[in-house]
Image (cartoon, rainbow, N blue to C red; front, side, top):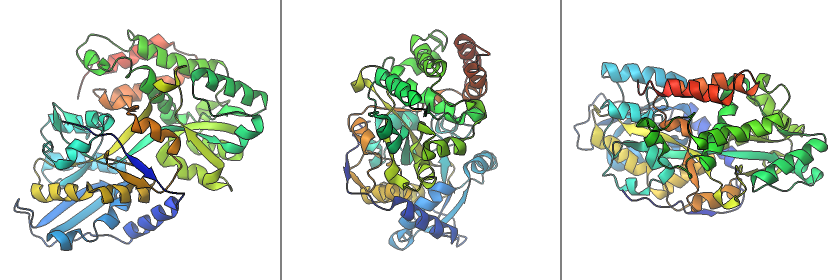
Length: 435
């Protein structure tokens, strides 16, 4: 399978947030959700059912308005929040009631992830789809099961460092491009009386962003085959110099006091508010959450910038973590041809572009599109150069490895356990393999 790079054109700042709100309203009013009671006959006629999460529902709504009239297919689309969908989907697949097209998680990150369901024979092989050639490397690895493409990415999100422009300017701090520059910036900000990095680590969700960001530069580019070697039992988290280096970077910031005081008790919204008000200078977060950050400040989008967090002193080695949002075809679909036809429709460059702009996300496929917002311009060179990595946990064999990292990571941050103990606990969960 060949892959293509991500080629993007940018044009001015547009009202991405407004567009997202408009699409969400359309979704709330109930977009195409009909059922004529007719089962598909496998020839692209009849009804195509889909079960997606609420975010996908909002972005897909305008793309599907003309699909029925153009194809003769009838769409029956339902949605739920991701947690509810994940719980219900497993039951539906077991009982044979799952939709033709379903939202699945990347890699092996949950019981309804591509790798898990693909190995169980629950997903259709999509390798011969024309859009498979447009999968970017960071996404292809997460859609792959034993060499076959099993999922279609409707979008991607990046982990970025968001910063308050005014705070940086008042402190005389430039955007850091190396680890040493990041440390120096933190010291300057601290001297100016500002918390350098908001760390809303309550529950561990934002802590994991640091793990994936450090790993994207320090682990996978250095040892690209590490997941294969770990699955083969040739190395472990504890024995990996690269994984130890990733956690050492986080510990360096923590030991220097550059994270928020009381970080383990700070919820995400409070951390974002600290950056918005200027009490803290920056926060590592998922790009999809940027509109929430903007909403806490009168300056809005113009008050903030983003950059890819560096992990080494080689600026050209910095990678950015990306996460795809997947759809897959149920292997037992009533209308598999219709479901594939729908994916082909979504893969058209104009629809890839429309979805990305409506939702304020990165395009799922590596096709040439125009992004209306310039917010993510600083990380675009990394995408263009292929300096991207999927979130580390997606290729771990089960979700318990991540949960252990989140839970025991809090003990590690407060000094109750060592790095070796934390990595050892993750190794123990990893050794259990795929559920």
